[in-house]
Image (cartoon, rainbow, N blue to C red; front, side, top):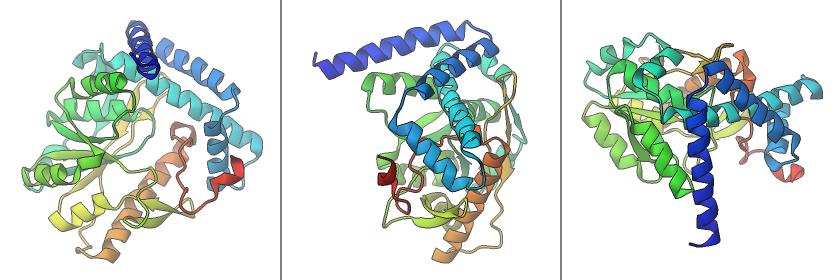
Length: 302
């Protein structure tokens, strides 16, 4: 085995052991373990820490440095909590998941699927997004085609895929998703996307995100307007007891027809929904990503 493969395999084994141990803990203990790991990682000088603070300054120019630092530290906690909880989820039963996550308005799913035009779930890297996809499939009893970014570590990728599909969902790699997404919609299936990271230059649209233009995936809006496929969105908000609440809402576009301009308008609508959710608990969003990399010079902090 090459050195890199050995490291990847060792990382995978550590994740499995940590996940098994975490699965035996009560939710609060599991959450506090993640918080401790996040606090430790935040103490270490890193590129991601600089990016998080830089992004927070863009989004909240009126907040003090101490306020931004507090949000950034809690965002690191959030990432670590998600890692611990997702690792533990491989050992969970369906009952374990439903104890941890409550979904309001789940009846929207069968209602909208009855239109026979498919369904688009939109969410973001907020709270525990992995829990959100798993729970949506369980509660709706509808297998969801989840669009995912493949992990570089093939062992970890296989493990995460096993967790994501354990309760009936399917995964579709992002790099060849277009044809499969259209096929799923035509079969009246549900697809799920996380659309809050930087999109492809020259293909997607710049949409204001916290007043600063950010290149944003327009695929959900294009699909919805082209096929008249309904959109629902929801975010896994973490409660103080480390359970989660998801409020599903339909994104209305009944006033829009298929056009380039309306694709931008509809994209802006789901970006606004995300902004409102982030403002409720900014620490639950992933600030460590270069969200504005095509409109802001991140070289200043490197």
